[in-house]
Length: 168
Length: 199
Image (tube, rainbow over all chains, first blue to last red):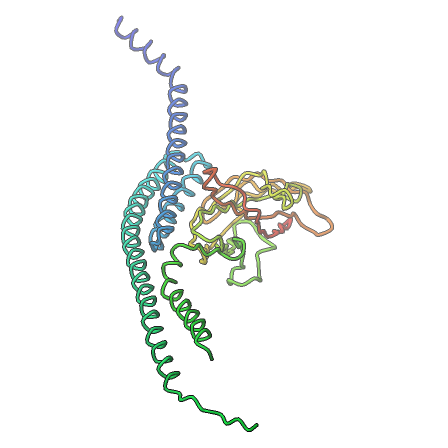
């Protein structure tokens, strides 16, 4: 009998607490969705910064931009779901967006490092090529000038002086 | 020509050739400034992908299509957001003079990235879902954007002069600012008027 009474009291307490438990669960779901969206926004922004750094290093970032656009679409979907109080949908979209953003960031970092290395090598080759070119031109000019000057004097010396007659 | 003249000519010629040889290295060191100021384009096209036949006289539960486009001429890849907003005749539009966006909440948004010199374009279908007309006022409770229902709860008063209830669907362009690490209104918007008849 006492067990039955205890069960009834426990059930009554559960029934009373049910709305609060449900509300708490909804509220926490909303918090999780907010967190997931904020995190996705941060990840996409840092992925964009990484892509921009790769672009400034001279890399072709077209394919990364296509991937970033997928992430942007998912982020917009997450916001739309959140506005409709579809917090589960918002969490799913935001998490997918974060995953794409992380992958793009890593790809962009690798691309930047690779591009930077080949760009530095290219710059050194350019500088070395220019330097060799300038040295060759300077020495060539000196040598050319000396040859020219020698020929010039030879021509001048070959010219015989003419004696002009004094008519007076 | 004297030897002095030849020497000057030789020296000038050598200098020109030296500059040509050093040009690739100079190109690495001397920054070439980009001419002109960066800007973005925002456009809206009708259902036939032309600047005509925009949806105007609309009915409930019917699909309407427009094409939204953004062109990037900012000098590097940019991160954009377009907020789609819905207003009646009295609610505020963005302020061009103060560069302030409309305070209305967005009903839909696009987030995308555009490489410098390229453009982004997307189709937007919209449909009035829940509309009630009572006397001289109409209430649009929700509108579907690309199949996503959005709550708007916008009330419009009958415009006797123009014979209809008028709403405006407009698109604000926002640009990600890398310094503040947030989106800022880019002072550009486009929109279309929508006329809802009483029947």
